[in-house]
Length: 302
Image (spheres, rainbow, N blue to C red):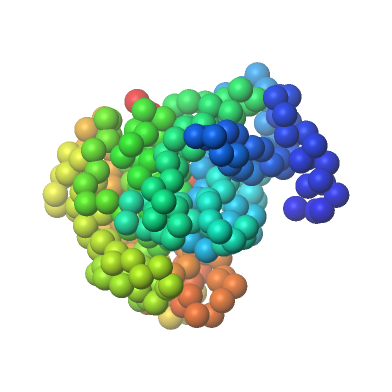
């Protein structure tokens, strides 16, 4: 985001209806000021209900980092959804976390009510944009993926489907009030949120639940068939990775749970190159953004 445009849009962060562009907004939650970024695609018109994708940053990052890390603004422009980037909390302004259950940082240690924050974000957004309430989706990276899982369980009245990337559930159970379809992306060589669970390389010290724990919990919650359909996707790039898709189908209200395993993949966003080599290999065989958006289109709230 260009500095001049960002400063201009900061001044526009009031109750005025949104038009295409980038905005920074603040909301009050439990007496504290919280913030989020919004990207409105060029084809947005106020008379047409528009889908929303919430994108939660990883632990130790922030909303602006997530814009670049995910590339979701470009996908929003192509596909016509509003991209929303909630900002976590923390002692350092640019190194923030969300309270996703057993992770992460000050947000979890102080039991910050990030679910209330997300509800407030959606309330605020609905006051300034024509939001299609049947098509509000969530994704996130690492700690942000864990936050997407948490709101799917605790805000199933507002969230239609989720697509966590490189982060498992942060809770032992999920108890959604309705079926919420899930597409989970995870590298089997992820050293920061290990596929089999346990402690990773990161500074959080979190003892992560396994990816299988997350998938099994949501297969049960959505009442999907226990026998999945497994597909090996084309190996389009010789980047040291391959991709396997495991799909649990026929859940209640048409719900699905899909696990996209990046074989040889690290703690990355599929289709995007990581900014730090220490995160591991990012596959170029698929685009997480393309796959999740196609999935979201198939799973509006019933």
